Amino acid sequence: MSSIIVGIADLKVAERPHIITTLGLGSCVGTTLFDPHLHIGGLVHVLLPSCNGDSAGNKAKYADTGIIELIDRLLSMGSNRSSLVAKMAGGASMFSQSSSSSFFMVGQRNVDMCKDVLNKQQIKLLSSDTGGSFGRTIELNTENGQLLIKTIGHGNKYI
Image (cartoon, rainbow, N blue to C red; front, top):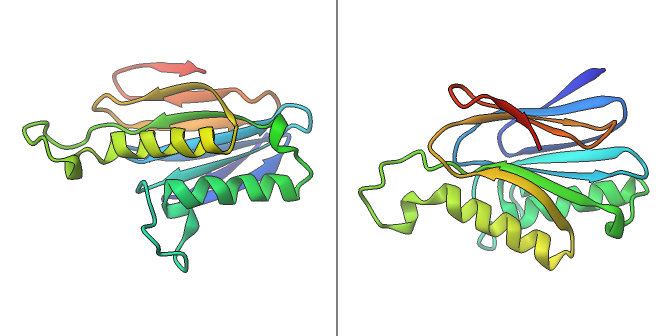
């Protein structure tokens, strides 16, 4: 099974048998979509919650535009919106909690926006592994939709 790498502020889609992976999710969120009927999936590595009107920029950089772009790409591959299911990981708090400013809570803001977009798009979030103060690497298996989450010091798990 070949591996497809997704960079920061990037997204990729693939059919089975591929693994789609992204490395080093800190406050970023990796959101995956999977169609269990067609065995196709995709992953977007979002850096920030909202594009704030920057529609000409990199859509994958933001949760509010990146997830929509990922949905559109899977629909263009033949998926039905009603078949798609989501999983996500990341959104860690990588800064000191000494400040209550939401500026320093990028991870949580990313998680909240991803959930909001999925909810508005009527895509079910099956599971997530978010928060904490540690990074994650994730791998989406397009054979079965399993998401492997790898961490240093917190073990590996499938969701």
